[in-house]
Length: 440
Ligand SMILES: [Fe+2]
Image 1 (cartoon, protein in one colour):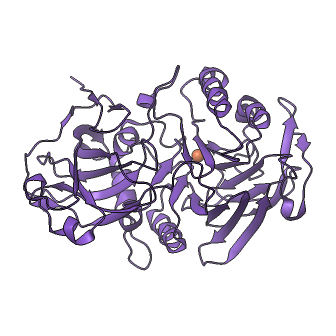
Image 2 (tube, protein in one colour):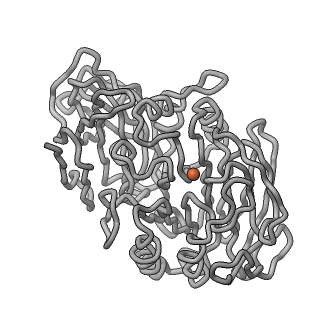
Image 3 (cartoon, rainbow, N blue to C red):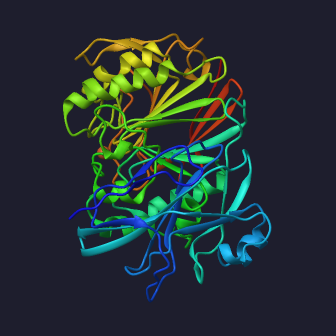
């Protein structure tokens, strides 16, 4: 019988719910023959200022699901569990689960721990596993207090799909830029229900031999469901995201979510929905309520990420008019600054856009300043960055909405400093493909 575990991690103000899987239970002291944690990666399910969540895999019999953490690297490194803790070390227990998969056929054991009650703007060292079987020590840094003007920076990429080496190359480039966290707009793997695809992705190494885990275990990774993930049980089991369940939402509340970082509000949506009524009903209802709570004096920036672009000029998919009809009116109403998408495997930046005609490929371009940026929040910029490994699609600037386009592997670095936003798009050789600075 499938099992589901729901619990509130100690010190966290939110509930964690696993998908329905073969086994789901709090971690225990059980150890298998090869208990070493692998595929460690971090994200947020609570406030970036005071929490982080970490997931990893182990052998089938190991149920050690603990995190040891602290600000002193040597202490974290030396400790072997709660009984031997000394000094200001923290310890948190989590859960473990097992699911079955078909590609390859078998069972996979994962672990997830939510660490809460942390200090703002602080670098924490941590390791996962349990006594006698800890991972190496990684580090993760909490966000500054919400409302802090910055500066901070984040990376954006998407669509790695069937090329884990390019994905790891992108991760290596992103790490070198030193972002505080990263957004990924979906389609990490070719088949979201394939355990083998996910293992290749998490075990990816770059052309120069760097393991993607070196980045994924340190830079929180916030992910939008793509049409290749399709909210698969593996996807939902392997990642932790904010999971406040709203009306009509699936994925144990991880289908859509928002969080604040510094003076910016981030929204992650799902456009690869199980029913069109989600995109026309429950999701925009939640989005409107969520954006309505943002105080633009304290939080001037609103960024939205989802997989399929409302505006795209690429040869394969192009603009998704259903997404445009469902979501753009809300982006317009709340003056969303930038929407980040993937799905088309290229790089594209739109002119600022405000207003459109339902069902039409025509739209309304907004007043535009130098660099192609909005003037006084005149419009929303739509960016497609689907260049993290999947086979590239042809790009074009022939569409009325497209300002720049290039068919190339790419990633973005966005820097926020008060009321200034600078976005730079890079090719994988490090050359700049596009850049704009938007001040308001
Ligand atoms: Fe896609």
